[in-house]
Amino acid sequence: MKCILTENIDLSKKKILLRLDLNVPIQDKNITELSRIKKIIPTINYLIQKKSKIILISHIGRPKGKIMPDLSLAPVCKKLSEMLGVNVLLIKDQINEKLVDKINSTNANSIIMLENIRFNEGEEKNDNEFAKKLSNLGEIYINDAFSCSHRSHASIDAITKYIPSYFGIQIKEEISALKKITSTFKKPVSCILGGSKISTKIKIISNLIKKFDNIIIVGGMANTILKEKGTNIGKSINEQGCNKIVSEIFENSKKYNCKLLYPSDVIVSKNTYSAGTNKLLDEIENDDVILDIGKNTISSIKSTISNSNTILWNGPAGYFENPFFENGTKEIAKIIAEKTQDNTFSVIGGGDTVAAINKFNLINSFSFVSTAGGAFLEYLEGKNLPGITAIN
Image (cartoon, rainbow, N blue to C red; front, side, top):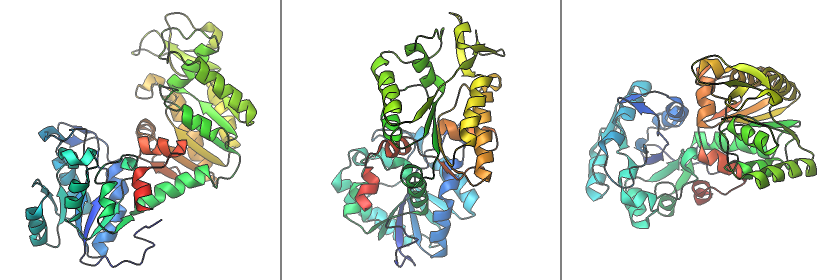
């Protein structure tokens, strides 16, 4: 990889365009989750040490080329200033030659942040002219936004045509971890997949089932499997029309000798404001809602994980945000954390999964935690990511 850590490039006093993903959750102008910001601190500090002039590029939300004050990067700019102990100056000017002059005259000890890059129409269109104007603001481009690298956007893809381009520290770590999971893993290797829709992860399952020893399916995806297998799931969340998908999963698990594990018992409730009941599958009633995995299922998952040397986890086991239904997700997190301490390699990914391990104060208990969403999943599917391909 063309990473700034491994390439012999002079960064001193150079204007560095640094593409980050600072698309963090904000409520009442306050950032509620800092994982993505914390992830990029090492790259920024590295460039500060190299005495580079840093120009940050990022986005929040989907303004679709329109200026929307509610999606300003101002709160991120303020928080980043606090975390770095360095003045981060938000510049809202249009991207043109005048902005080049403004950047050149800015205090060398300040970090510059451009306003939400998606306020520009050319960004999501991957417009070459816009990318060229953007490239003129710096001398070197660094992509450290793995979670955006599945997008063919100007600040991710087209910009690399006009300026020397490299990867940042976070991207290098993300890809190294994912390669270790998908290519150079130590067997036995197990994957836990949750989430609501099985159709969105069928390509991941199809790709991993050929390589992994165990695939554990939980959450809403498991409800769909249970339904297609003839279990009454009551009023539980599930996906319609998945008979073919479920059949394909089971056929491939036999074909490639991959053990498929899904719930044998569940926690159900009539509502979400009272504790649930542990039930076997044949005990589920028509007005029950499945909200977590049961104790027998947790025991089976623990047994599988205990015998694994490589673990991938994407997606919670249930409605973990509610204390009544957090146990399955919490127990999975704990057993993986314990195995990681015994030198098992573990990769955790996906927004909900990261939120869960944050809730249980286990964020630092795994080999690698990915804050990427779509890019993480597409990499696991075996797809080429535009932002990675462009630089490679």
